[in-house]
Length: 268
Image 1: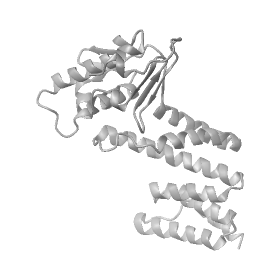
Image 2: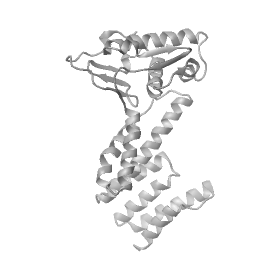
Image 3: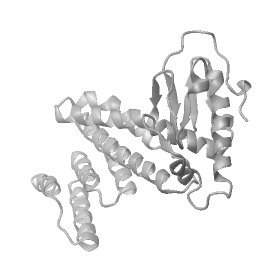
Image 4: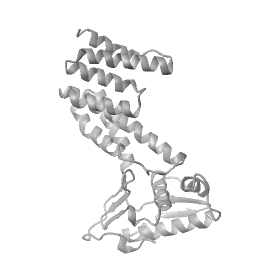
């Protein structure tokens, strides 16, 4: 069970927003210190905490939490096990300060996290950052897209509960992969604008490693090769894209990809 000793003490000061990192190493930072992965009572407690944080604002049914914690086979005494997990989480959170002892609300077969202070959550920050970056691109403010796209990319590339299985974990991994792909696309545009095509090419290859059918990744590779003066390789990148989606999906490249191809042809 977590104890106050698991919270690293810092100088006393007003409690600001708490920062929670769910991707990579699970960490909770507050004005009084932080709790890292080893400070949580168990892996099930980590999953329960993450789900309550990400689903805060609505009560989660006990059965919903149980499905997240034990997606394959719940223990025979799953109700008692869940009660114990929530109790230990409450004990872990209590040393964070006023209001945290009562932050986990249980009522009518549900649990809900009502944090006493604002929360900054890395997964939510990544989603907001990639929206901001894409908006900057649409407005033609390309240099302003670099910072938020970097934030989104650095968060989204971290692993999310590695080794765990289940629909809830998989869904969040899918969301993170999509954020990462969008961030890479934006960063590629920024690099091309900054005349750094080699970095744009790296982003394009990373996109295709994550999702080979992502035409935006193929277009980025084409544009980067063309910007580097490698026209033949740009044309080869288009052909690889055309062949892949024709053989695997039975469709032609999108109009956007055709436009990128035609732009390369004009360089020949």
